Image (cartoon, rainbow, N blue to C red; front, side, top):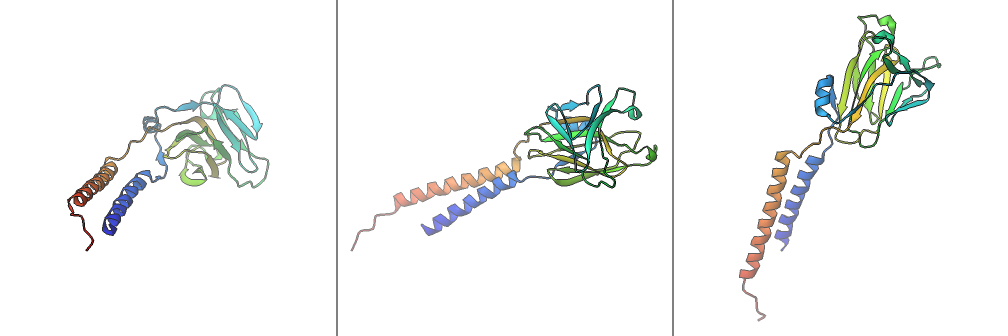
Length: 228
């Protein structure tokens, strides 16, 4: 009986390891192409920040997404004439605190968001058309990427995750306050179980069932032991 119990425990541990391997949470997948991102997250919504400006505030909410200023910062929506035709409204941050070094923008998406992306550019006109700014992106409090856009054009950055995204933070390293447009968010494409993982799990469970059947047959075939 002891040997049988050990084998059962071994198969059980094997099955649990297979499930754990499948359930392991990978780091967010990073996209620098909106086309590729859209293919990975086809059910998303996009915020263009409307057609009117919004004055500096501690936070602004669009379509259930909250954009808040970080420490010593506020957020606003402005007419981004320098990045296109007048009427192209964009979101940025601003501060009256000299030497403010905290995160510029903290974004809180709706529950169960597993994909987001946005266009970002520098607000520092001194960069001209050749210099780049530098902005660090945090997902759920962890730094995951640094993007380096110019002042005259946007760069795209996007992410998909296998766990819900509860916060996105943008911190300027150089290049002035970040300027955001076309903020896209929603669910990533549904992930299916990896075939190799499911095959291993199925093999382990099948082996356990076969072992149990052999054990029952062996018990039926063993003559009863009579007391002497």
